[in-house]
Image 1 (cartoon, rainbow, N blue to C red):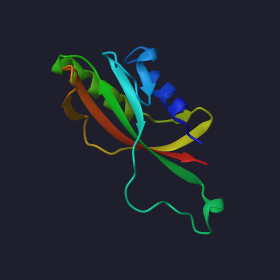
Image 2: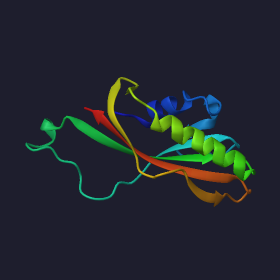
Image 3: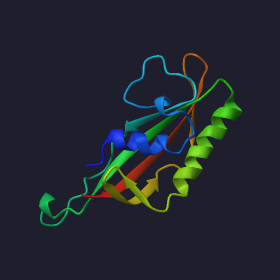
Length: 133
């Protein structure tokens, strides 16, 4: 199992922001310079192994990363690109005790989603992790 808690810890390990500012689920009163790790609803048919689930050798975890940064668009964009580039250059990965055999970025660049109600700029990065079961 590839848990959100372990994924949150992996994202925190990039050192883009402080550990306590990387969160899963809803964070009331989000602090600036924080990164949210969320499950992303998949689309399309499920991946099913021939022979049924007992024959499955891998799973897919679809994620959305929210870079909630500052009221400065250049700073927010820079932080989003820093995270994106770190994800692009991963060449070996184990999260928790789970070997991850693939990381597929689902967007060609961080997606600008504008500002929140307080004027803080946000970017989103979608990715899929392919992991061994």
